[in-house]
Length: 108
Image (tube, rainbow, N blue to C red):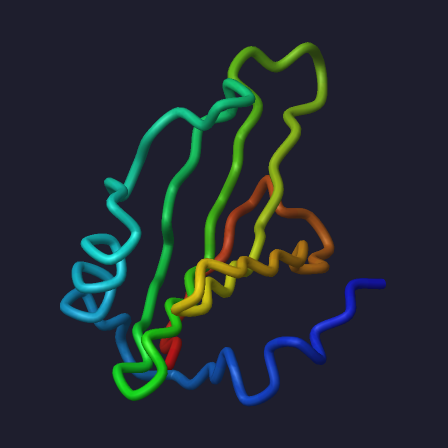
């Protein structure tokens, strides 16, 4: 089981619509696009992101999909926290079946 204690207070999920402005700010800070190909060849999609301005911390949810599936498709949902000093922490989000995706309503 993933240890989410490093994300104390983050993420907070509600039923509100996702904040595309917050995602755009997070992507600029990360120097990334919403979708790209990672160094491991996996397709990556940033589903939601937020920046804590006082600390400079960026938190985002990323979906990773195997580039050329062979039978079962390898899909992983991950939460990333990047501190202002460049320290990054990553944890897989436990889900019944990530192949069916997820909807992030609010991340702050």
